[in-house]
Length: 85
Length: 193
Image (tube, rainbow over all chains, first blue to last red; front, side, top):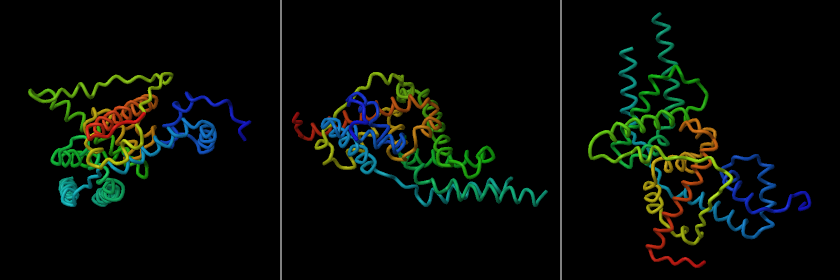
């Protein structure tokens, strides 16, 4: 399978790693990317670090929900607008 | 005529409740991180929904309501901040709103943050680091990593080319990593390289 891949270039990793992690490239291209970096321990390690960092940010950043009161206030204001239309 | 008005109102009401209101939590979260103030976030979300209702005819039913609402909120936020920046003793927000992006993808700067440095961090520290980022950088991380919008959607929400989304996101992540490294080192974590 390796024979189908071009020579590994670490600069290619840097150009594509975030596109892969952000779901911006097709699945087939992603598979080729993973196969390519599996040949380089340094790139593979960095890929796992970036993957963990993205998951870490998305799960650790506090999420604040909208209060029920605010939703009610908004609906009441919309109702007032509708009544005046 | 009365029946027509009634149908029109019913249609608007259905769109508002079924397609707009379910995004209230995501919009509030975005507003809170942009303003870091509950009252300002409440005002911003309220303003967003009222504007969305007012311009509901320009929304195509069944399309991407979430991205449409986020764009309204982002514009309202920028307008509010531009207004506030003209008042004395307020922060000069032009500094943070007019960041110069580069689309230079030939040069890729990479900030390496060891996994063990950030893995033990608490949500509070990460939230604080994110909230301390200049608003353009904070916005792009919130849209991509928290709300999981695609680059194309982000480009439309903040009115920048996709290449700029890529470069700004990359820069934002590097700055966030630098901040987290500072926090970790302050907490006494030693880097072993």
